Length: 301
Ligand SMILES: [Zn+2]
Image (cartoon, rainbow, N blue to C red; front, side, top):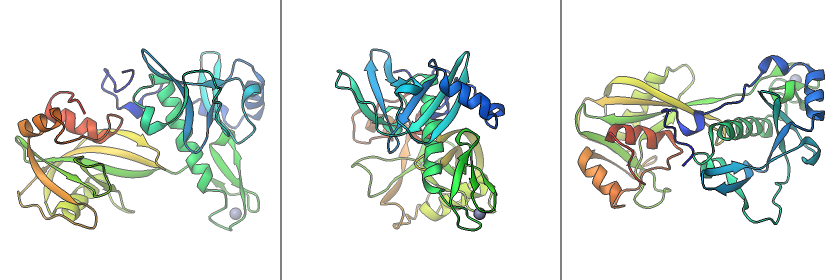
C-alpha cells in the first residue's frame, strides 16, 4: 500500500507539491504555465478522478492542458519544473484496460504522497467553488480568481476565500485498557468508530471534544490531547484528532446521533477486529489511525 504513512502522516495529510501561493495573483505566470505542455492536469468529476492500479498502489491519470476538458481551472502548485492543475469536467476514461473512476475516500490511501496531496487539494477547492457561486453580502454572482483560490463578487468586488469546517474526532479511553467506540445506524453492519462532531462558532477544539463526548455518550472527559489532523473534504472538513480520558464509566447513548456506544477492552477489540466481528473505519480515515494507534499496532480491517 502506497499510503497510510510509514512516516506517520495521515493518508490525506501527505503532499509533495509546493502550493506556490505567491504565484496565484500573477495572471502572466498562470497563463504561461497553462500553455506549457509539461503542465499536468487532474480532471475532477463530482469529486472523482480517473486512476490506474499498479503493484505499488494507485496513480492518478494526469493530462496535458491541451488534452484537458474546458472548465474551471484550479492551480494546485509546482514541483520542480512542473505545474499542476485541476479542472472540473468529464473524466478521461479511455477504453484502455485499467483506467477507472475513483473517489478520494476510496483511493486516497492507495496513492503516493504526491498524488494524494494533489487529489485532496483539488477536491477541497472544487467543493468550495461548487457551493459559493454567489456573494454572501449582496447575492450577485462571484467569479474565480487567483488560480481558483478566491472568488470575487461581480457587483461589489468583495473577495471570498475558501472555507474549511473544523471537526473534532476523539478516542475516549479510561486511562488504561478500555476505550469507547460508537456506531451510527447508517454505517455498514459491525462498524464501530470514534466519537466525532463539528466545532461550533466561538468554541475551542478542546471544548468541542468535551461537549461532543458529553452529548453523544453522556461522559465527562479530561486530559484532552491533540494527536494529528487531516483534511476531510466531504465536503469541507478538517478533522482534528484527539485522545480524551473519561471520568466515569456510565454511557448514555444519544440515540438521535448514535445507534450504540460501548466500552471495548484493548485485547477484546484487537481480537474482534482480527476475526471481523468488529469492522474499523477505512484506513484513509483519522478515526482508523486513532484507534490503531491506541491498539498499539496496525490492525487489519
Ligand atoms: Zn457582492
